[in-house]
Length: 447
Image 1: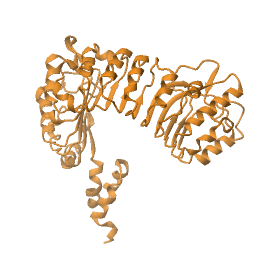
Image 2 (image 1 turned 90 degrees about the horizontal axis):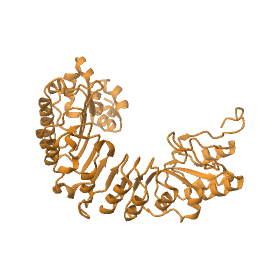
Image 3 (image 1 turned 90 degrees about the vertical axis):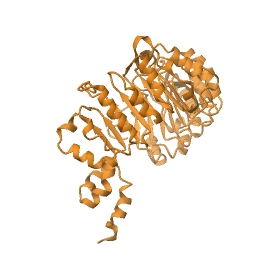
Image 4 (image 1 turned 30 degrees about the horizontal axis):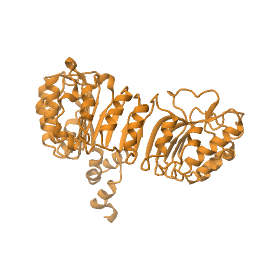
């Protein structure tokens, strides 16, 4: 036998394959199936088609020990073959496109099977539930008491259901909720127990309007100064008010990651954000209509550990008047940059000032300075950042790690020399979004 074909060596090689790459090798022979099969079966989806394929049930039972990520979309007969899973890392239960999950038979029976599944998977770390019907039973949440990460959405809950959840999930560290519909106007966080505060590391509330009223959430976050000492990640998106965000940010210990996209983040929240500057690594403020260019400049010149920033728009004068950016470790930056377009001289001068600051960000991997389809068009006297060598683009020469660049919906007048410079110096660049030249006819000179 060729020593390179020894089962032990094949198994080592298989560790470097993903699902798409492992499917074909797993069909070569039994030896290769043993090596590549665990990769093929690492993630598994149970849906309506599973029951129509005769081979699915025995195949899953045989390969259940390899499954780490299980998604259940249709579970009317799931008890036949779900139980053999013993090494799950995360479990997802969601409603199928027909809305028939947990409606074909007694929901209590199915939740009981899920409870048994959780108990026999001690390594299970994450549970995601998105079901439009009645929520999980007490037995289910009691079984999930050791789960650290929980995501729930599209569930109707009454006071007893909420109390059951908080009583069962005693060791929760990361919680994400979306579209919770409390019955009788009962608030979800009203049942939160102080015993869980010490270990909570991430809280994500994805829609205030669907969760409203938000009184108990605010009380939960601002109950006592430092009541969530290990919280690192906070997500409060969609219609949270400026005053609410300010109250939360002032009460919490310094955070590492904050996401307030689509919220009313404004001056009050910005003032409260100052206490988090020293530790902030990720800030997402996309589509925040009250956010100004001065606020974005303040973040860029005050957060030394920042690695990603998603914001709305900033004008070049804000950058010119501000201090040098200190977030030199930034890897992902998405903010629309506008320069004064009244004269060619002002375009070049302001673009050079912007490129001077961008050129300091030598670790950037993604840069978006254009507008997406939801952004409001700039005032008539402003235009997007001018990507030309004569406007200072050569100051980006240090961006050797840049892989993605976008200047969508900005008017560019790049020449072949400008594009050639970009290809020569930004060698890792694999994707550019935007039209390089909005003027003239370049059909004879491919850019």
